[in-house]
Amino acid sequence: MTLLVVFAGLPGSGKSVLSRGVADAIGATYLRIDSIESAVVTALGTLGDSAVGYEIAERVAADQLLAGRDVVADAVNGIGVVRDGWVALAKRTGAALRWVEVRCGDAAEHRRRVESRVAEMPGQHIPTWDEVTRREFEPWPPELTERLVVIDNVGDPAAHVARIVGALRA
Image 1 (cartoon, one colour):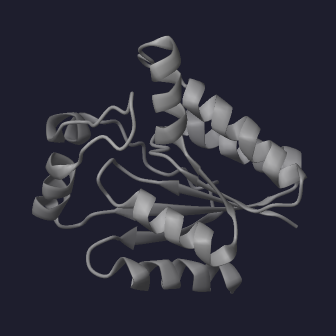
Image 2: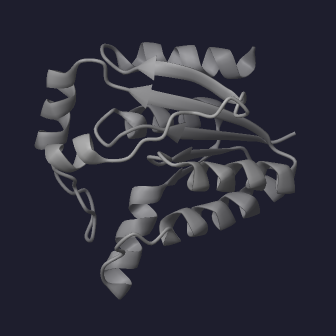
């Protein structure tokens, strides 16, 4: 059975560092919504509130899962409708779905991370601290029991990656 590990959390929480580390550790395909959305913006212009990045990621993930490859998806995944897409994808492909929510419990550190970020690729939107604090992040519904773990991403990222990988293997 293939594995679909979906990371969720606000910008600047450290999702990308942890999700890349987990993907490397388990030999999974790594999908980053920022990379997809920045390519769309570069080619077509602004995204607005479009979910096109999530739609593209789900289709690429489906190709990988159906080919027998595990997938780690890195995105905010802050609202139910996008989370529902991953749940439906796992059902369609027969993949085991695991969620990792990444938080940064130190507000000063979180703000520092957000304010020190620079675009890594053309078309990438870097949110301001105000945008991050105003961003909608819906509570997890009880039926999403597939959520693996909540990580307070302060301290050594390698220790957090090891904890996630250990939980995946348990």
